[in-house]
Amino acid sequence: TITLGLMQDLLENEGDAWKYMLQELKSVYINLEKKKIDVNKLPDIPLYQRQPINSIPPEIIDFAGLNIFLKVSKLALRTAEMHIALGSDMQDTAFTPTKYNGDYAVWLKNRLIYMFQNRLNTIENNMHKLEGEALELAKQFLDNKKEIREHFLNFNWTRMKSERIRIHGDYHLGQVLVDQDDFYLLDFEGEPESTIQDRKVKQPPLKDVAGMFRSFHYAIYSTIFNNDGSFKTSQENMFQAGEVLYKYMIGVFMETYVHKVQTENLNIGYKQEIEFLLDYCLLEKAVYELGYELNSRPRWTIIPLRGIASILKNKKN
Image 1 (cartoon, rainbow, N blue to C red):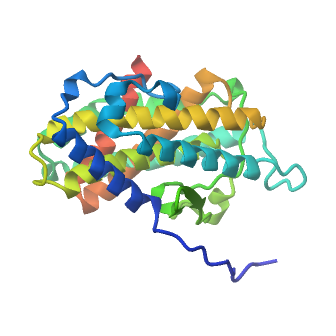
Image 2 (cartoon, one colour):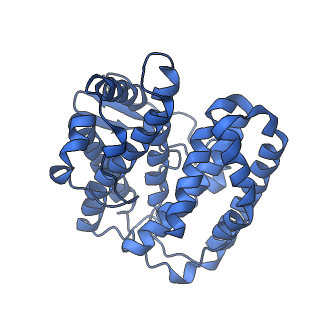
Image 3 (tube, helix red, strand yellow):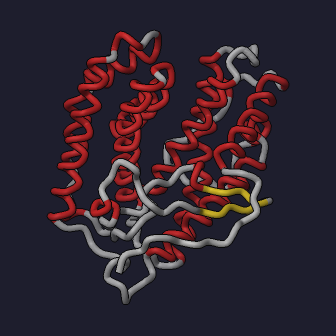
């Protein structure tokens, strides 16, 4: 059978989570300036470290408030519930969780190496559009191209103990509706550039999580760029504070998400495998973003480039 149309109930809402998060983050930066917070004294945490809300350092709560973390935790819960639902059908083989295998690894590597080479060509042909830190990070990206390529090729499926499921495939803040204090997830069509066949391939659920983390990163930098001139705080200090906040948002998300999926026996692997998959998927997402930014908003290229630099640094550590 072929589906030609779909009717859905209207969900009254307050807009998407992207706009909501931009409002929250603007308030965070207003607070940063109002309280004259020293960004150099904000306590940092490792990337992906699970962070219970009740043990977030008081300096971070003073800077960012509590509400943003409560919302991130609720979004993590809804994300976990989505993956549990997508991975719980044991009758329909199109949705039954499955192990990694050689065919998947070949498909994945071919797809990513093609995409990576395309982005390399794009950045080499557009270096003249970049300046300042974005230019330096672009040079660093080119210097690290062998390492990035090897990272994409270093997907050893035989070491994977987790399972793949059908995922959202294009998961970010713009795909989430806000209704009072809750979130509703929509648009399950998958990644726009992918073929229908590729969208049906079962993937690690952490790929959706990585997509949301990249969306958090974009929201932070968009807040800075969209309010350029509105703040007296230097852009570099705003970047620095944003990177710290980003890690805490990830930490809070991970605490809620991992606890929920493991409680429901959705197999996403143990700590080492989780961090490998997040690194892998985040790097894929950030490299993917380079193409759009270089062609459309060269100034914003710093966002995926900073993301790539952070992932490579985390991998070395």
